[in-house]
Structures are given as structure tokens and as C-alpha cells.
Amino acid sequence: MLAEIPAGTSADVDRAVESAREAFEGWDAGPGERQSLLHEIADRIEAEREVFAKLETLDNGKPIREAQGDVAAAVDHFRYFAAATRHHEGITLPPDGTRSVRTVHEPFGVVGAITPWNFPLLITSWKLAPALAAGNAVVHKPAEQTPLTALKLADEIREVVPDGLVSVVPGYGTEAGEPLTKHDDVDKIAFTGSTPVGKQVMRNAADDVTDVTLELGGKNPVVVFPDADVRSAVRSAFLAIFYNKGETCSAGSRMFVHEDVYEEFTEALVETARDTEPGDPLLSETSFGPKVSKEQVDRTMAYVESARESGGRFRAGGNRVEEEPYADGCFVEPTVVEGLDHDSDPVQEEIFGPVLELFEWSDYDAMVERANDVDYGLTAGVMTEDLGRANDCARDLEAGTVWVNQYQDFPAGMPFGGYKQSGIGRETAFETVEEYTRTKAIDVSLR
Ligand code: NAD
Image 1 (cartoon, protein in one colour):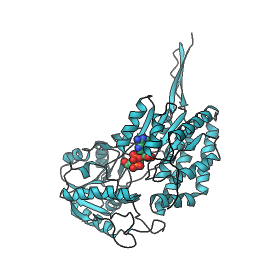
Image 2: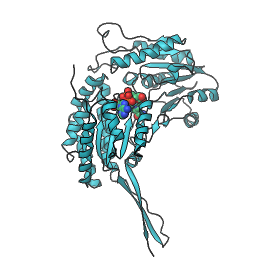
Image 3: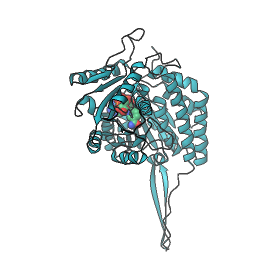
């Protein structure tokens, strides 16, 4: 066993919210002070980067190189939002001689942050950094599968913020998460997780008309045009679906490949998938790690079986890894399947594993209609050498982010969030600070 972590209850949530409220009311740090504080948090994560990365890999199973990348990105997001504290200005209406109108952005107060297990530290940073930049207190409920880096981060943050301003209540969704979403002294909920749970969070928050940001699931299309540079498109496609062993909300899991390059592209991708060896995630040469839990392996394999029963043809993978020393682990082979009906469950639902579904196309309009024919709209990819065509296709796809000739790129400052049932609100960008504030208009009579 790696660690034993207490499971919080509604009583713990009550205590954390009470302390957060008290700390918030006693905290009047201006933008400069909040900027310094966020830089100090970034410095502390950076100083402990190897510990954070190792903890993340042990907890989640992601290859250590990917965990190191997550830690560096977390540092960068704290620094980005440190800078944002200085630029979050209001507006002034043009003077008309009768009144003076200006706006100020005020923090909500107490933010409840709920995060998933796939990028535990990074997604926590995506919430904590803008929430603190805007001047809020935060109570964080990490995923029950992966609470370790959240607890380590809280230890670091505690050294630089007033007591109670940031706290963590580890535990299960219904026991610790739900009380946070229903709490009448929580002013804002920032949730990342699955769409069904996101809907429940929204329903719970509705009772007190609590503000919500929801970052939810995805079933994201990647479109390959006939003029794409096939080698580079295969590299991007591989990253799109197999990065973090397919456990990304942005996974490019439905790939639409033009008939002129379908076989060439598929052969090259299948070869790369077959050559991908599972490995010990703590070793720096490993590029493909185990899934987070046995439960998630079973969930993925149930979709694989359903794809098999629906007539899917497996070009690569389609099995758990049975070879020693991985037979008892949580490895699923990188899987590429074609021939599925687009209306079938494995195509319409988020698998959240290393399973890629391929579709051949010839008619552009019909392909776009299909690509958009899911409940989700988080991300998409377009592979072509023609940037005019890329732009048109990016505009036609219903997604919050469209990558062109690349995939899984998340620079701080680029808004990230979903269309349709993939969510509400945008993270990782300047506008995110706004999501953690309320706008007040002050209208003064000049008569
Ligand atoms: P999940 O919805 O099961 O859980 C997410 C979090 O919500 C966990 O902390 C969980 O304990 C908590 N939770 C569960 N039930 C709850 C309830 N009733 N009330 C309050 N909180 C509750 O998701 P998961 O399995 O941890 O993560 C995978 C999902 O997250 C996928 O759907 C993935 O696409 C999504 N995700 C989205 C983004 C994004 O930015 N859009 C990023 C990463 C993951």
C-alpha cells in the first residue's frame, strides 16, 4: 500500500468552510501582495519538483517524464496568474456629465474546488492559482484515487497564506464532494470531472444559486485531410489518444481520416501503437504507463468488449497487457479500432482509456456533421498543410479548443473549456480570473 488517507465527511467540510470564511474576511491582500504570494507558491513547487513528480507517478501511474511536465506546467500557471493579479481592471463608462460609472471585480469569498485523478496537481493548480489571484479562500476536495500531491501542495501553501485560507478535505465524492457543493456558505464551485457528476454538481449548486465552473468530459474528433504530412500527423495523433495512457479529457479518440491517406496513415499509426511498450512509470525511458486503477481497467475493457460485439475490427491492441511483469498491473494495450457504427455506445461515450476509433471520410460536410454528432465539445484536432482549410475546419468543429497540426498543447494564457456538455467557463487564461470574481458597478450621480 502506498498511503492511508482519511476520508473526510460533511463535518470536515463544515470546519474547512468555516475556517476559510474567517480567513477570507481577515485577508485584505492587494494585487501586489497576491502576486508575491503566488510567485512564492511557484518557487516552493519548483524547489520540490522531484518530490511532486514522484508522488504523482506513484499515485496516478503516469510516466515520470509526463509527471515532471505536469509539475513544470503547474509552476508556470502560478506564475501566469501572479502576473494577472496586476491587470484585472474594471471599466469606466464615457463621461456624460450626469453620472460617473465604473466597475470593480470582487472575489466571491469561499471557493469549493473539486478535481479528478488524471492530472491531480496540474488541475488543482488550474483552480487554486486564479482563485487566489482573485482574492478568494479555497476548500479543495481532490479525487479519492489521487490525493497525495494536493496534500503536499497544501503543505507548501500553508507556509505562505493565512491559516485556513486554503484547506484540503480528501475523501469520496458523495461523502466530501457533495457536502461542499451543497454548502450554503460556499460562494462558488469550480469542478473538473465527468459530465454526469458535473450535472449533479450543478443541480446541487442550484439550490443556493451558487456560481459554477464545470470542466467536463470529451469525445474529441481529429480530422486528417488528404494533404496532411502523414508522419507528423501520426505523431500528433499518437499523442492525442495515448498521452497519459488515454486518460485525458482532451483525448482525440475519434479520428476522421480522408480516404486518400486512410491506409497509409492507419498503417503508420498502428505500427507506432504496436511498438509502444508498457513500462515501469518511475523509469525515465517509459512512455506508456498503467491506468490509475483496476476499476478503470475494467471500465475501459467493457467498452473494448462492446466495440468487439458491435463488429469493430481491431488493428492494434484490444487487450489487457498479460505479459510478465505487468500481468497483475493496470495496463491496457494501445488500441486502434475501425468499422464501428458512429451511433454505438463506444463511439458516443467517453472511454477514458487508450482506445482510438477510426473513421474514413470523403465528403467534407458529411464528415463535419459526424464529427460534431456527440454530446461533447471539448477539443478537436485538424491535420492539413493548407492553413486556410484548417481555419475553416476549426470554425466548423464544435469544440472549445482546436489544435492544428499538433495536439495536447496547453500554454498558460490559452483559454481551456468546453462547448455543449463538456462544460461551462474557461480555465488557464486571463478571463479565468473573472470566473472567480463578481462584477460590481458603481454609479455616482454628478448632479
Ligand atoms: P468524476 O466525475 O468521477 O470525479 C471527479 C471529482 O468529483 C472527484 O474528486 C470525485 O470524488 C468528485 N465527485 C464524485 N461524485 C461527486 C458528487 N456527487 N458531488 C461532488 N463531487 C463528486 O471524474 P473522474 O473519474 O475523477 O475524472 C475523469 C473525468 O474527468 C473524465 O470525464 C474527464 O473527461 C474529466 N476531466 C475533464 C477535464 C477538463 O478540463 N474538461 C480535465 C480532466 C478530467
